[in-house]
Amino acid sequence: MSDAVSGGLGRPLLIFTGILVAGQVVLYGIGQAFPDFDMPSSFGLVIAMVAAMSGGQSFARATGRAFTGGEKLRFSLTGVAISIALSLATIAGILAWYGLPLSTDMLALVMTGDPAMAAEMKPWLPVIFGIGLLIGWAVIHFGAGVGAKGMVKRMAKEAARNG
Image 1 (cartoon, rainbow, N blue to C red):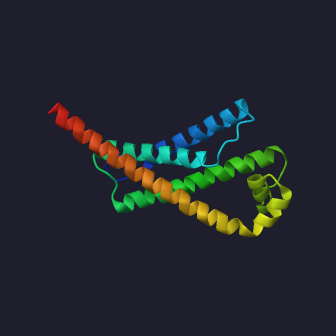
Image 2: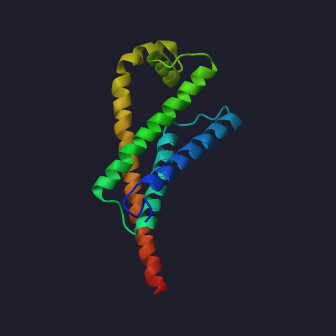
């Protein structure tokens, strides 16, 4: 019995992570190919939504059902943790490449691009990150549920059509 069939979330989270990484690589490539293109920060949420929907679809395809409330909560909380870890690793890697430390000062500067604005924003970082975590969790939670329910409906239609 696979881990998804027994209620495990390993494969759906692996798919979520793969799509999240691939989406960020594509965004980076677009940024490199078109340096004057002002990329909205909401693209990250769009990628997270697509990744969560794909993870939900994977779960539904493996189990034949949508998430239970607890499974969706575990998926979304783990997805947020994965997103944070990938983001911090990426930022830390970029800063290390330039010989800069990962600190709250540098995070504020990376977010704003302006030292004066970064200094004003630094005390608000916990609030900003807290709101970001809630938004990220909501997007992943919603996306996973929609993806799983959509796949269950699609599988039911296919089963009805095939007899």
